[in-house]
Amino acid sequence: MATEPVIVHAIINGEKANTPKQYPRENPTNPEEIVGYGPTNTREDAIRAIEAAAAAFPAWAATPIDERIARMERAIEKIRAAIPELAPLLSREHGKPLYDAQGEFFVTLAWMEYACKTAKDVLQDKVMDTADGKTIIAHDPLGVVSAITPWNYPLSLSSIKIAPALLAGNTMVLKPSPFAPLTVSKMVEIIAAEFPAGVLNMVHGDADVGVELTSNPLIAKIAFTGGTKTAKHIMKAAADTIKNMTLELGGNDAAVILSDFDVNDDRAMRRLVISNFLTAGQICMIAKRVYVHRSIYDKFVEKYIEAANKWIRVGDPFNPNVTIGPVNNPGQVKFVQGLIDDAQSRGAEVIKLGQVLDPDAFAKGYFMQPTLVLGADYNDRIVVEEQFGPTVPVLPFDDDEQAINLVNDSIYGLTSSVWGEEEHAIRVARRIQAGTTMINTAAVQGLDVRFPFGGVKQSGVGREYGAEGLLAYVDLHVINMPKVGELPNIPE
Ligand code: NAD
Image (cartoon, rainbow, N blue to C red):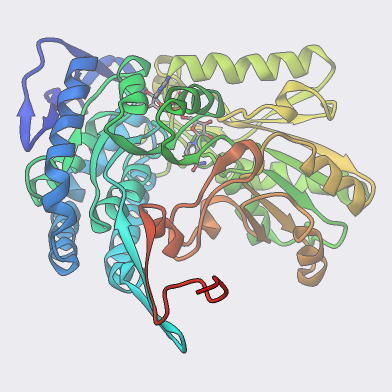
């Protein structure tokens, strides 16, 4: 369904900025089709956006929270009204099936609503009256926040930063990923229009513009979601001016299938397959390696393949029977295929999963048929690296102790899941190093905007969602009024 290309712009100080050059975004299902164009911004554009955000900060920080919430609520309603137009655009530029694109809007709005509902309570002054005085703990906004987001969930991973930052009184410059820039730009346009000029700005680009957004002295905080390697550059760029940071990074999430997991539980098996392959495996918190107790390994593999062949239907994102679309970009296809080839060359067996519903689209687009990798070594690249694509290795373990060690022997610690009898699973879960561990479900199926989300180790710093996701955008300012403000034991 080709339509006119969508043109999006940078937003600087409330205006759509004119940019002499533009870059195309193709449709991963049919790369010959250009879905739209984004502006090729420069470092100078980023500087102008940062200066606009800095100029808008004092007035916005002084704006009462009720007004900030009311503006955000108006933006939410306008985004909701735009879903019928924008969800198909997201499918076309990203490759995720329409139901998946609509699901992303659902999560985006659920968080924005939750942030609005809780902001006043979470961000209000905490006043402590004690016998020897009174203390106010104020929640001061930080200043200009730069938000840098990836392509896999462009809307939700932008709103997760925009809503709390603006509600807390900060201003922002956001930079989306060039691999899915269009729908998020439309959403940012809608939000920015509800706020005073300069409060929410947006520039496009890649590392060139990102460097300015992470090193400019006017930036107080960086809210970044993306790869762990990129985060290392960002930390270095920010070091000179010691910036506050929230980093949501890569993961190599493990699913542990305990000896008491019921392999005949079809619903559980379906949840597990979904947790491996939703959005063609391009989710930070998807299960990327599966460890199965040796006593049920063979039966598990048989039942898993059965469930996957039923549930995984690859094809055009607009085919209503399709559950998995193409991979977002050719670089990602090459990387994931490289991991599969590496495992195969070292003796692993690669089993194709699911049905290909649209062979013509499959031949044209950036498609990969999902695969299960059996017999890989615990140290093979496909096991230790984040694949971020539609393939998953399944490996056996002999006892819980070994499983826990295998899971924790990783630079990552984003989410994880344990499957089996509940109390047993909780005991194992407590010993896993991760920001979230789910029991008998995994990935976005267990996501809840009320709970803090983030990683340990090289999967990140800080939390998004929950009260913590709002508090990440303020500094605590203690205003202390002791009754006797002098040291008691100084000689008169
Ligand atoms: P990426 O790190 O390549 O890019 C992310 C963003 O950083 C993009 O906007 C990109 O243009 C920008 N960027 C690149 N170099 C930069 C630099 N030097 N300075 C500043 N900005 C720079 O990641 P990606 O390929 O877009 O996304 C996939 C990765 O994101 C995966 O590793 C995935 O696990 C991770 N991710 C994590 C979470 C989470 O919540 N933990 C969520 C989604 C994705």
